[in-house]
Length: 261
Length: 253
Image (cartoon, rainbow over all chains, first blue to last red; front, side, top):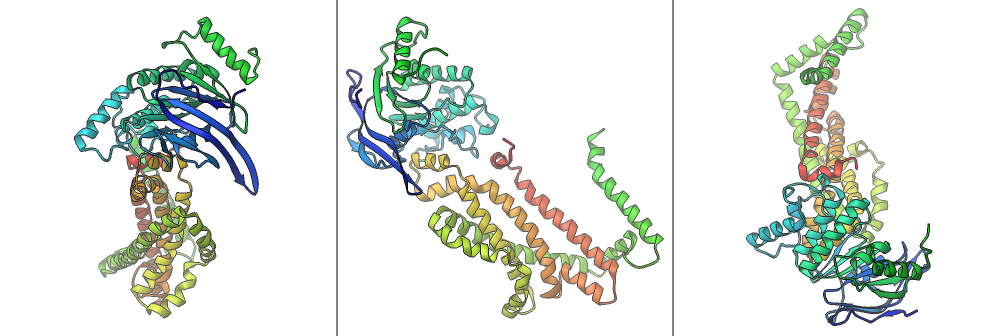
């Protein structure tokens, strides 16, 4: 199996390049290798899914790409520039719902807009409230919102600063299955409208095949890239079409799961 | 039952207790307690002599100064220490060593330093408030979820913006609980401090009433006032917990 992912979907400019990312966590004198020589290339405007079993290190990979963690060795470059830390051009949407509970919906969306004038800020806030369908909840606090609304709020807060990349770490993991399906549709709708480069971490094979341009399958810890599966189905995807099932089952097989319960 | 009657319930309970108290005391011949009516008389006498207002103001004055100064110093300091893990490791044993020492144990030293008077009492209240507040602030920083800090950094906040826009709001609910509990402690300590270190205030009223002729009606009147004002202080602090932007910190889920 190949350990690299250099084949960017055809015709896209390279946005991100991760080279030889290795991560070893040290705790109580014990060394735990989490990532092992991961190489990855992501094209501009691409929707990439990192797929792997829980605890395999895919979140660590995403945190490294986002600049929250420093790899033990290896370099991440974005637009040819080495990543040295988090940057407002690339917003991380957190697994544990990072919306600020002390701010209203408006306050949260406006959080990153402190450099804009008051009018511009208000315009942006109104625009993104509409985009994620939170009209009528402008003055509500997060605890008054449902899980799906909070997740949409966090996506809106991220989009409002007009980043060129979004990192999503199992963003829909805590939602019920119906809300999760709706949120996937919403995310695709927004992505098609704004064309941000998205790296989306998930352990859900169906989710990956429904969303991504390419699925990067990662092995159990220490995580390596086990294979890359381009999903050559146009959106909106028919999730009972033969091609969809073929790709999905291929990934099941690659992960070593029998597709029978 | 109407809301009004439900509200009335605690008052009805107190009223019943007062009646039981009145009957019990009047049926036994000794002088173990003054009756509620005698206490009421004592309160009236204190008001008439203009002492009640003066003593309440004196006690509140000391608590306000001691508590406010402690809050102004301890909260930023505690947050800074909590923010810096190494500083916390260095300072925590020191704080833990001082914590079990009752503020009242400082009475001799505070009199030695400041003499008998307001400063000694204020110093004691300051001490009693400072350590709980610094601990509250340190723990509050420790308990901020990392996502809030990471999100703040992600949006490009400078360090000082991070402090004002993420750190303070994230710890505010816990700080307010800490302030409320500490104000209660400060109010306990002022009474004790006034019994020894000064000659005015509600604590002084209580020892003075006993020393100057066993006026237990005045002693209990003083105790009642301490209770009433303590309740008012707590209610005031509690109302801060109702601020909408803070309520997330007190919810069940």
